Length: 76
Image (tube, rainbow, N blue to C red; front, side):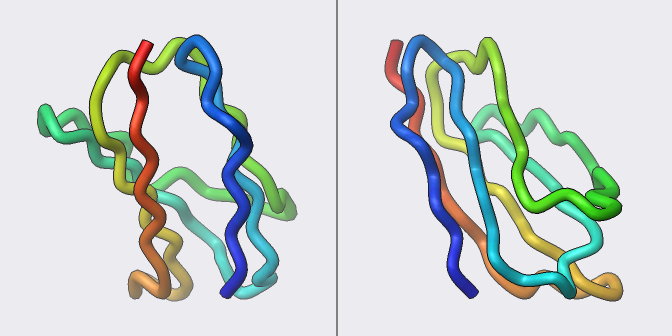
């Protein structure tokens, strides 16, 4: 699966993916904050704003299984 992350600037990032089977995204940060199972519907990009410093794992899911994980690091 191909995933593109924009340059992360001032805590904002855009993540774009190219797999139509993705139906949910889950985000976990290194301080254990979790955004559980966000439905993507027909979307193919996610815009994240005001992220605090840290490492974020974005899990791309299809039918309940994680197909791919993208790591982004924010340093403001």
